[in-house]
Length: 109
Image (cartoon, rainbow, N blue to C red):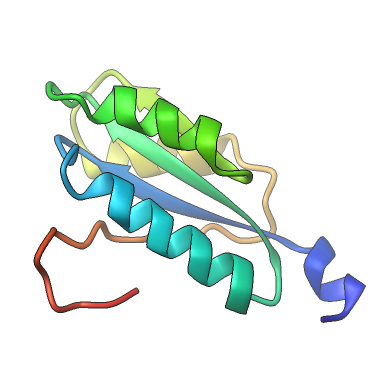
Protein backbone atom coordinates (compact mmCIF):
# COMPACT_ATOMS: atom_id res chain seq x y z
CA UNK A 1 0.00 0.00 0.00
CA UNK A 2 1.41 3.39 -0.93
CA UNK A 3 2.53 5.79 1.78
CA UNK A 4 0.59 8.61 0.13
CA UNK A 5 -2.69 6.76 0.65
CA UNK A 6 -1.92 5.83 4.27
CA UNK A 7 -1.17 9.46 5.18
CA UNK A 8 -4.75 10.47 4.37
CA UNK A 9 -6.98 10.25 7.44
CA UNK A 10 -10.59 9.12 7.35
CA UNK A 11 -12.57 9.40 10.57
CA UNK A 12 -15.38 6.84 10.77
CA UNK A 13 -18.01 8.06 13.21
CA UNK A 14 -20.14 5.48 15.00
CA UNK A 15 -23.03 7.31 16.72
CA UNK A 16 -24.49 5.22 19.54
CA UNK A 17 -27.26 5.47 22.11
CA UNK A 18 -27.75 2.56 24.51
CA UNK A 19 -25.84 0.09 22.33
CA UNK A 20 -23.85 -1.71 25.01
CA UNK A 21 -24.64 -5.17 23.61
CA UNK A 22 -23.86 -4.50 19.94
CA UNK A 23 -20.98 -2.06 20.28
CA UNK A 24 -18.02 -4.34 21.13
CA UNK A 25 -18.56 -6.67 18.17
CA UNK A 26 -19.34 -3.78 15.81
CA UNK A 27 -16.13 -1.93 16.68
CA UNK A 28 -14.03 -5.10 16.57
CA UNK A 29 -15.30 -5.99 13.09
CA UNK A 30 -14.98 -2.43 11.81
CA UNK A 31 -11.44 -2.10 13.19
CA UNK A 32 -10.39 -5.43 11.67
CA UNK A 33 -11.85 -4.49 8.28
CA UNK A 34 -10.21 -1.06 8.21
CA UNK A 35 -6.88 -2.44 9.42
CA UNK A 36 -6.69 -5.19 6.81
CA UNK A 37 -8.56 -3.78 3.82
CA UNK A 38 -8.75 0.00 3.92
CA UNK A 39 -6.18 1.93 1.86
CA UNK A 40 -6.21 5.07 4.05
CA UNK A 41 -5.26 5.90 7.60
CA UNK A 42 -8.31 5.84 9.83
CA UNK A 43 -9.72 6.81 13.19
CA UNK A 44 -12.91 5.29 14.56
CA UNK A 45 -14.81 7.68 16.81
CA UNK A 46 -17.54 6.22 18.97
CA UNK A 47 -19.95 9.08 19.67
CA UNK A 48 -22.15 8.19 22.64
CA UNK A 49 -25.13 10.52 22.68
CA UNK A 50 -26.56 10.61 26.21
CA UNK A 51 -26.98 6.87 26.63
CA UNK A 52 -28.22 5.61 29.98
CA UNK A 53 -26.82 2.07 29.88
CA UNK A 54 -23.18 0.97 29.92
CA UNK A 55 -22.38 2.17 26.40
CA UNK A 56 -20.10 5.02 27.51
CA UNK A 57 -18.00 2.74 29.74
CA UNK A 58 -17.71 0.17 26.94
CA UNK A 59 -16.79 2.89 24.42
CA UNK A 60 -13.95 4.01 26.71
CA UNK A 61 -12.74 0.41 27.10
CA UNK A 62 -12.76 -0.08 23.32
CA UNK A 63 -10.81 3.15 22.84
CA UNK A 64 -8.18 1.86 25.27
CA UNK A 65 -8.04 -1.56 23.59
CA UNK A 66 -7.82 -0.66 19.89
CA UNK A 67 -5.33 1.73 18.31
CA UNK A 68 -7.05 4.41 16.26
CA UNK A 69 -10.29 4.27 18.28
CA UNK A 70 -11.52 7.08 20.50
CA UNK A 71 -14.70 7.75 22.46
CA UNK A 72 -16.61 11.02 22.67
CA UNK A 73 -19.53 11.67 25.02
CA UNK A 74 -22.29 14.07 23.92
CA UNK A 75 -24.57 14.94 26.84
CA UNK A 76 -27.71 15.51 24.74
CA UNK A 77 -29.64 12.86 22.85
CA UNK A 78 -29.63 12.90 19.09
CA UNK A 79 -27.71 11.14 16.37
CA UNK A 80 -27.31 14.38 14.46
CA UNK A 81 -25.91 16.14 17.54
CA UNK A 82 -23.37 13.37 18.03
CA UNK A 83 -22.30 13.48 14.38
CA UNK A 84 -22.04 17.28 14.30
CA UNK A 85 -20.04 17.33 17.54
CA UNK A 86 -17.44 14.97 16.11
CA UNK A 87 -17.38 16.41 12.60
CA UNK A 88 -16.99 19.98 13.92
CA UNK A 89 -13.78 19.12 15.71
CA UNK A 90 -12.34 16.64 13.25
CA UNK A 91 -8.96 17.10 11.57
CA UNK A 92 -9.61 14.20 9.20
CA UNK A 93 -9.68 14.38 5.41
CA UNK A 94 -13.07 12.64 5.40
CA UNK A 95 -15.72 11.68 7.97
CA UNK A 96 -18.19 8.97 6.93
CA UNK A 97 -20.81 7.69 9.34
CA UNK A 98 -21.02 4.02 10.33
CA UNK A 99 -24.19 2.39 11.59
CA UNK A 100 -24.08 0.01 14.52
CA UNK A 101 -25.28 -3.39 13.35
CA UNK A 102 -27.55 -4.98 15.91
CA UNK A 103 -26.45 -8.27 17.44
CA UNK A 104 -27.92 -11.15 15.48
CA UNK A 105 -28.31 -9.10 12.31
CA UNK A 106 -27.34 -10.70 9.01
CA UNK A 107 -25.80 -7.44 7.79
CA UNK A 108 -22.02 -7.31 7.44
CA UNK A 109 -19.67 -4.36 7.63
